Each structure stands twice: as structure tokens, then as C-alpha cells.
Length: 114
Length: 113
Image (tube, rainbow over all chains, first blue to last red):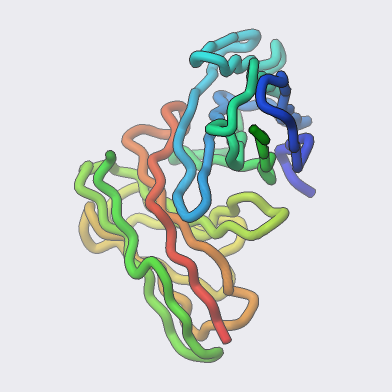
């Protein structure tokens, strides 16, 4: 059983459409990160959210941390082909972890068609 | 880009042979991690280090060992490679615990035949 469940696992859309990726858990996290990964490369950090209810924006990307710090969402407005990639959420559990270990979701593969 | 490099980038090895993957950082970060990435599983933690000679197991540590004799180097060893260890391996570093995210290397694609 995955501690962090991401949905959907696959998303194929046309350029200009909006989309939302979800990251859900029954556990509480002290912080949650979103990463983007391109083929043949390692994940690259997009954002970290630490406060329940927090919303952060990065150009056309909007990230939200749930009030209870158990879930998060990534919303992309007017998707572009350059947004294509694997999106990963990762969380640090609020109890029982030390030394910064992150737990990752399975990832969402996004394909944006021109 | 952050100074983290993994070597080799690709390796094919035979079942039963030992394999060592290297992660080298120039950031002087305290924390280093080894993950494996497989389809449908995301990234799973193998081992991590919180200082020189200080290491601990992650969720999928069976069949793997690590060593960190210097701040900048974190080695992952497969004692006797098996086909189930065919995967892409990523090293990550972080300066502080969890809240500030990781910087990842570019990965090592390992194939065990």
C-alpha cells in the first residue's frame, strides 16, 4: 500500500487545457514537495508547502496543501507541451521520521499534445 | 546546477556479481539518500546517511549496503546482483531535514542479466 496516493497516474491532454493532479494520504505530513522529472534525468524540486491551507503559485502552476496536511494538489492552467513530464509528490511524515526522509507518490505522467 | 554526480550512468552486469554505484557531491550537504525508481512504484528509499559513517536502512534495503567515509561520497553496493535489482537508481542530497526538499543526481540505469 502506497502511503501517498497520486491520481491520476496518466494524463493526456491538449495544449491550452487545464488539469489537476492530486496527492492524498491518511497520514499527516510536516511538509510536502512537488517534483517534476524528465526522461533520463532526476526529479527537480518545484515547490515545498509546509502550512495547512497554504497555496503557492509558480507561473501557471498552483500548489495547495490541505488544511489537515494530509493531501495536496497541483493545478496547471493552460498547459503547454513543455509541461510534459512525470510529476511526483513527496512528503515528510510529522511523526516517526528523522533525518529528512521523504516518502514519494507513484507519480503522474503528463503528456501535453500540441 | 547543484554539484551532485552519479557514476556510472549506465551499467549492465551479470546475476551474482557485486556492483557499486557512486554518488559524489560538492555541496557539503549533511544528508544523502539512495532511491530506486521502478514503474508503478515511484521512488523508494534504499538507504540514507545523516553524516560521515552514519547510515540507516530505508524501506527496500535488502540486498544493498552503503558506505560514507567522506562527506562528499556515498556508495551503494549490491553484494550479489539479482534481476529484481534492475532499476534506475537515484542519489539525492539535502542540507537540512525534510522541509527543504532534495536535489537529485541524474541517475544510474542498472540492468542485471
